[in-house]
Amino acid sequence: MNPEFRQSGDVSTSLCFIPELLSDELIYSWLGRLVAVNALGHPKKYLSQLFGTQNIVPCVDLPTHLEKLHDRLGVNAPYDSIEQLIEFGTLYPYHRPFLTQERHEQVHNILIRNDGKALKVLIGRVANGFGANPPLRYCPICVLEDTQTFGTPYWKRSHQLPSVKCCIKHRSELTTYISPNLATDKRRIILAPYVNFDSKPIAASEKQLLFAELSTCLLNSKLVVIDPSIRKSLYVEAITSAGFITKSSHIDYINLSQSICNNYDFFDDFIYRDRLLTSYESSLNWLRTLIQRPERASHPICHLLLIGYLFKSVEKFNEALTLLHLDSEHTLNPSRSIYNSDLYLDIDAQTSNIIHDSSLSCRKVANILNLSVTTIVCRRRVLGLPISERRKSLTSIKVNAIKKDLLSGLSPSAIVLRQGISISTAYRIRAQLTDTLRTQRVWVFNKELNSRRQQWLQVKSQHLEDGITAARSESPSTYAWLYKHDRAWLRKNSWKPSTQLIPKKLRIDWATRDLNLLTTLADYVASIKQTTHRPRISKSLMFRKLGESMIRANLKKMPQLEKFIQQHTESIESYQRHRIDRSIQDLRAQSTRLKIWKLKRFTGIRNWSSSIESYAKQKLKSIDHLRILTKKATHDLQ
Image 1 (cartoon, rainbow, N blue to C red):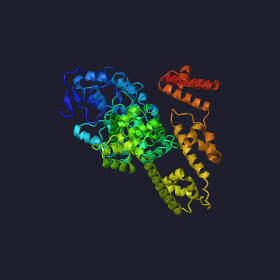
Image 2: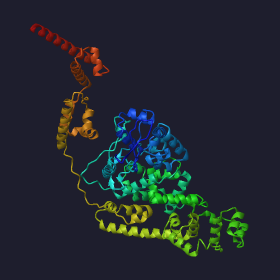
Image 3: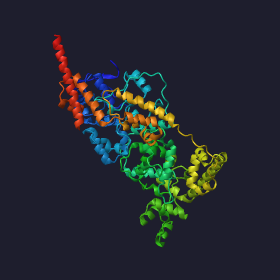
């Protein structure tokens, strides 16, 4: 027996073999193989047998009616519980972390019991414009390996993830097979194809592989629903640590959008590039939505792009999320940590005396003033008051190492993982270095400014005769950076385009174009006239064939083409007569007795003018007269 199958036990259905659910296999694929090996026949039959109803369309990524499927399979179900079936046989774990708890419960209930109506609207696929039903994809090398190992190919979950174009195992591009929506019978499950290929697979780009790894890690991470406020806090903390904060402590969406686009090469290899770059001139709309409206069901693609940029991997994002949950002292508002106004609030004399009283511990002062211990510690450090150090856990060597990491540009989240401290400790120490970090940022900016100026001057020296357009084309990032941060200097050190005469573009040879278009149109009209069931040869039809806007604007410049169009434009009445002649031929071929009412119904002409009706009656009269003469001639011969 093939090791892919095991013999079924006593079940209520008439299944002979139950295939194993293979590694990374969709439940949709498993059902297709189950139907194939048991030869269950028509979709109505096996849908009724497996789901208890034939009124269901099997979904590739988010199947429904799983409770009925699991109950009917019984001990032959691929997993012991429905939850495992959802976790390892569908793409729902890919969407789940970014839904609210309420939406998660609704989607979970639909997957288990309902028919799936509005499911993909609920999780945000339709509204986000990333496509609700992408086509099935496969890796040719995986298909060959699976066929050799298991005796059959199958659809893999990681290959059906949205916007994933490559196989991370073989580092090659996926092949698009077919969209289930284009199938003639949508209820029939599409099996993975057997593939034989001789050509070398197309190698995937590094950006494609990076995004595919992020998507696959998210699918297999087993992340539960993340509270939107916590997710927002984590994003804001990472964005703040990366330095994308304005002087008013708000997120700098414009520079953040520019940096993300540069990191992903402006999504050059992405399927939904146009959707991701919507409103790029100001900032990325989907980026603002993730931060300002965290409760909205945004597509995981948006979250993954931000996670990949800020955290580099789903694993590090999960670690930071875990630290944020475990740290009870974290205020869930990291955006205030750069300029912690609590340290510099005006205080009265009594409060100042309590803070300066060295006989009171920081914890006792915090209880008296109803403030956090961290705030009191930070205020005393700013004032230069002695603080009892935790020698066992936070030595001066550790503090100096943390300060060194902060000054090197590491984010608090990275320092937490590197030094093994809490997130509040990292922020507390960073608050002591506010002025130093601000000075450092100014120094880094000035260093970048000088470097950009030198680059621009070097590019300018190479294009003194070509002008600013050629210089911008060679170094667009330098020009954009200076235009944003040092516009006055850039204008002073730029030049006007060269005043040398530019030769005029050659005129269009309208005579040649007239002849070429005439030949094309003549062939097109001739091919249409040879077709029995053809459309009316109108001006619009001919214009569309040649390019409507160009032809209408320049028709007078092409006299031969204009004359041909006028001669071969078919009037409505002429086309109606053609339809009458064609209908008479079809009716005679069916050996049908010709009547005027039959002809009117068969032609499909709604409005019959008097001239058209007279033409039809005359044609029928001629046919009847010819039939009588033929019949009489046949009788005389007999």
